Image 1 (cartoon, rainbow, N blue to C red):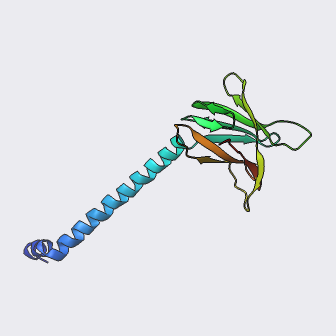
Image 2 (cartoon, helix red, strand yellow):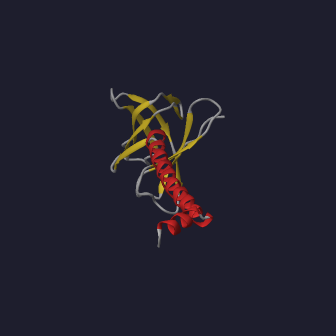
Image 3 (cartoon, rainbow, N blue to C red):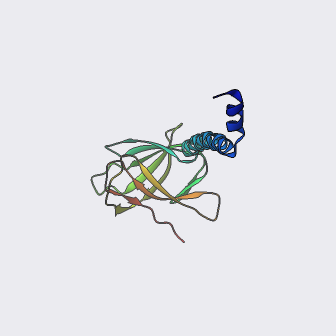
Length: 153
């Protein structure tokens, strides 16, 4: 193939179409990678981080915005959620401040069941009219039973 034939082939609309589609493919690839990184970063920042302990279902929760629990509103920070250690049914949740280990709130949850357990702590939130999100459910990792929290109207 001579230089003139190659130049003519490059100038043809088919060659330009291939060049353009390859450029679009590369751009879409990087755009998708960028979207994945942004979604991962948002998930790490916006979703509370939780760590758990099996006996008292101790769960460390870090929040970046106010969180309403029954009888209290927690400002942003790190908290320890755990079940009150009693011989009766374990439905009382205690919330401690991470830094001072001071009891911030104590409230009752009602049992709730689901079909499949999760390998991670599951906290379900509900949007509210004010700035604070409302904590609705708490499931400990590997458990089919969790607690649902009821709020006064």
